[in-house]
Length: 414
Ligand SMILES: Cc1ncc(COP(=O)(O)O)c(C=O)c1O
Image (cartoon, rainbow, N blue to C red; front, side):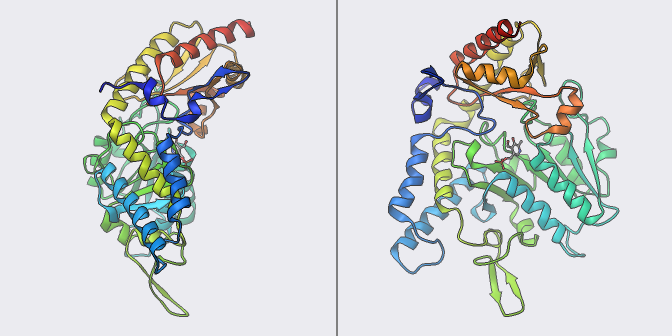
């Protein structure tokens, strides 16, 4: 069956509601959070209706069913990423996954491959979301390491011209985004990962804007850790994923301590369970994990290749139409090579917040502001941008609505 975003949209109950006095909802903010299909809503509610019990604990049937559902979801996530189950850690969000790695590295003792100290270097990029910037700033501050970064070119690509002086023998970790949540740029991982591994640095990938939109294989990417959020992948809020190579996860000290993450406990000490349990202290977000399993199964059934191709087509359609609008400037690459379905732009002197509010009055949901990437916005020399981000349920009608909404805003604001 051919890819039909109109039919797909019918799987998402919220997309058939109207807003602002009966207007059709045009949802172009999936980069912030995606909408949820009925199968995900049902999976989460069925967990509570039928199977709810604390996983890995009870000696009763419900506990057994809950554990099977939770561990089943882990297997689904592992298969989705081309990984194994022991490498999948359930967290509450991508933000928590990234903090987990940075904080745990900061707890590593001398002798560990993760030990970071004064004289070591941590490398990030200028296009990071705050979730993949601040944890590394904090790690540098805690350990005395130096924070370095790849700059962004005016076109919105990473400047790799000085790769060998950015990633050096002193680099312990390189943390970067796979796809920018502002520019849509998909970063050239092969070269960066090769250089990082040459100097023995670990690569942490923020895959929040790529995992929901394209086929991903952690083996092919060859990174060491990867984070993404359930809620951007048609899954529930309150669940994120940290994937890490099994040996590395088992070398990493814990992040949160408490029940379930231990091997043995005395009154004065404890030893840690192996991954993933080591990083899942307490009764976990079971229903959300099960919902994420249903979400990834849903995406897989539609096909990640087809989802990516659809978003590419839509991005081209949108870019062609937006560039016809006088005074509209796209922030980020204008060609489709290595870029995804996120379009940020400015429109003359209209402040993005005013534009966002105007579009909202027409039923069009976009995001405005610095998109949690303040240093990038500053570097681009704009106070803020308006961002339209596409997903599997968006159609050319949605793009047409956006374009006509912007034209109306231009008339309205004179
Ligand atoms: C690139 C990127 N990284 C990290 C995050 C943080 O994700 P979450 O808020 O789900 O933890 C986001 C969310 O917008 C993002 O776009």
